[in-house]
Image (spheres, rainbow, N blue to C red):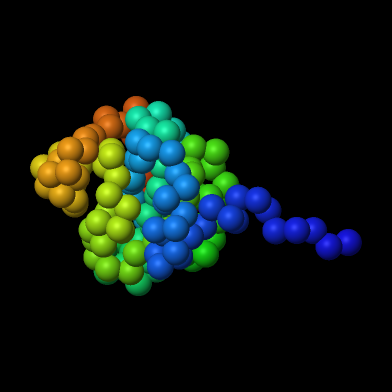
Length: 162
């Protein structure tokens, strides 16, 4: 029996196709980004809180090469970009998911001109890439405090000790 692809896969959008898809998204648009290598409770809590700040949300993931350049370790990312995109797209709080190969997401931020730019509480607002641009066009920049003190690095360390 043949099954159609899951509906969530339609939320994965190549950077070149973003403009057309974003034109259909209700505003205010929330933007966040990251590696999201191994999803954990801290990630999904942050994403749900970010989504509550607008009517739709775009998440931009670091490409595999971009993750490697962050210096998180030779074995990172654990999950490939294709797998990370699919997991992110499956979350109900995510409207669209895309990626960037550069060291920062500034090109995607400029592409979509979000109304709200969000990062986790380990990022002071003045260090969030795109904060000047988003504030410049009247948007908000928000650093959401962590509720759950979890990280992919800590999770991998725990797995290695088992």
